Picture 1: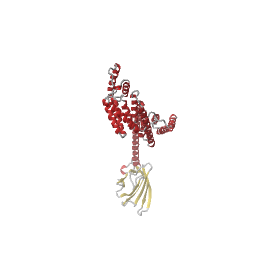
Picture 2 (picture 1 turned 45 degrees about the horizontal axis):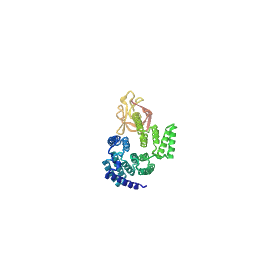
Picture 3 (picture 1 turned 90 degrees about the vertical axis):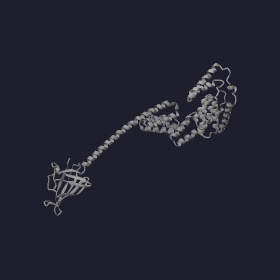
Picture 4 (picture 1 turned 135 degrees about the horizontal axis):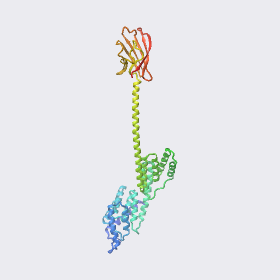
Length: 447
């Protein structure tokens, strides 16, 4: 039977029922007897009290079921209020013009509201189930179809309901296969949840494919025989492969979450428990408690990591500071800059010594130019032509003093390996600019 023919047949029957209820006088079936038995009166009074309570708490499924069973035990059946009849007629009119899933879903909600006014009104549940089916809202369709079968009175033909169930099964199976193909092509979390929601609302869960079972069994083996982290990684990979083939497999989600917990991947484990909860809502309490436990472990791990990170940063800063200090010390100790004193006895060229700090030679840079100063040198003897490298310096000592028998002295000094002395030679030149003599020169860094 095509869905369109079912729909128009249903609309015709429903409209006819509505017109009959509202326009004709009640038949003998619904006519209250002039003398009711005390038990019947008590049941109707209890029904009225429960109905008032239910209308204040329309989500109370237990109370709804109680009212439905009580109404079926009362003969003739309890009357349908005029308000409920009017709302039913309006919902039928809106269903005839509905053309989209959203429109059909709104119509289904109207029928469900009618059922709140009269929970024993079987036709309201059937109509809501039909509208849900047109909207592909399979969960709601099955719920309302179940309520219809619970509320329908004995002897009523339920062939249309059975056909609607078959249509629902077929449409849902088609939707499920389409959703599964989409998920396989693009396995996003939203696509996964869509498959789970469709599977959960089916009469029976789809069978697990053999490919998924193969990956699942391999994952279990890796978990049970794990000796290091690589085995847990292999188990996680196999569980994921199983859930790619069967994204509605609740047990696989739970075991995957356990494997991820052992790896310390708490956020991933929580995500998979949420998927498990979606396919097993009846296990919601224990699953939520498990999620809270994993959140606590994750927070503890995060705090410990933050603490370790802070300690690592502190250690890194300390090392950086120590390195700077070493570099600074090296820059001082392994540079030719500084105060130096002469090791050998004073001569006519150089002066000073360890006991004469006032005669130290001060080597420094001044705006990029090197200078060597010594307050004990004769004023007419100058140090110039200074050339410096990181560990070496050379210069010339000249003077116009008539008593100065040399034209110049050329000095070359090199920094020792420990940076504490300058050692080299001083070569003297006569007035004809010819080498005359040379001698060792040794300066020590003043501490």
